[in-house]
Amino acid sequence: MKEIVQDGNPALREAAKEVPADLFNTPELKKILQEMEESLDAAKHGVALAAPQVAIPYRIFIVRYDRMVQENTEEEKTPDIGIFINPEIVKTSRKKTSIPEGCLSVDGVYGTTERFERATVKAQDIEGNWFTRGGGGILAQAYQHEIDHLNGILFIDHAEDLEQHES
Image (cartoon, rainbow, N blue to C red; front, side):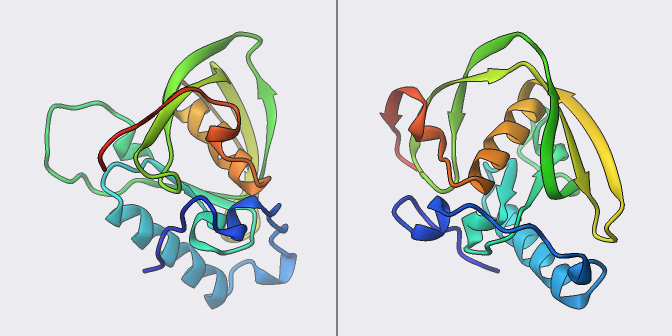
């Protein structure tokens, strides 16, 4: 498992590189994804993770769909992982909303960000096949937040009402 790096680490401020075609369907890419999944699994309050957050300079993020559903249970759900390689937002709603946000790489800091209510992402899977997936609410927020990471942007760069909480 790779440690999630914190604000101040230069890996968080660099634009990530495209995953090259010859890396798809390789043991190296599978290992990167496995390490990202283990790191996200260990961060019990995390719903998504971008590769730069574990100091991997590639345009990859993963989401835990199972953690995006609000349920009154403390039991750990079976991981339902979405993998997005070389992602780009291809469509957004016109309407934005102010939404509370935090980040595993700015642990304990929360604020309000303005995000599109809906977003559609085009990305590749582990085999290099392109797909498109849309979402609203927390999923749209995660798409925007994680793609910001891939561009070297942290939510604190544009959030308002930042507060420190005990982590």
